[in-house]
Each structure stands twice: as C-alpha cells, then as structure tokens.
Amino acid sequence: METLESCRKLVEEAIKEFNETRSPEVIAELSSWEGERFVVAFRLTCVTCGLSVWPEDLLYLLRERGLQVVLEAVADELPFVLAVYRLLTPSS
Image (cartoon, rainbow, N blue to C red; front, top):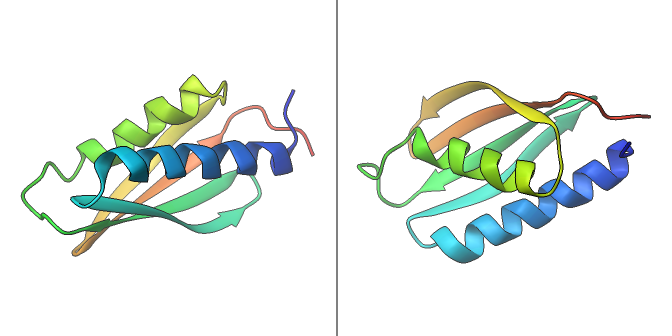
C-alpha cells in the first residue's frame, strides 16, 4: 500500500506526463492537497477543446501508475477546469 507522500509523487509524475502530451491546449497544475483529496487545475488555452475530457484523461494516467483514485467533481471556472480527485486506499 502506498503512503500519501509516495502517492503525491505519483500524482506529480502523472501531471508531468499529462502536460508533456497535451500542452499547449491545456496545462495541469496540482492546486491543493488535503488528506486523501487533491485538486488539479487545468489551465485551458482552447476553451472549445472538450472541457470534461482533460480530468478524465489525467484519471487514466493516475490509474496506470497503480493509484486507486476516483474523480469526485469537476467545475468549469474558465479559463480553468478544476477537478477534485480522491485516493481510495492510501495509508498514512
């Protein structure tokens, strides 16, 4: 089982890969982390490029790294999309 610190490193790696493959249309940034929940802000340069697709794309990258994570909420705050994720089985 992963620690919260090791989970955070995996999240940061996934965000880095996301940005390498999707920039300049969108850039993801880890906005906050509290307990098992974290928020990623997706800064959009193309507001017609499928707003809800970006958080789901990152979700798949997170799961590819072995994280058990769910996407809890998505909010459009143009030019940002904010996504709230929750880790299902982190240890302390």
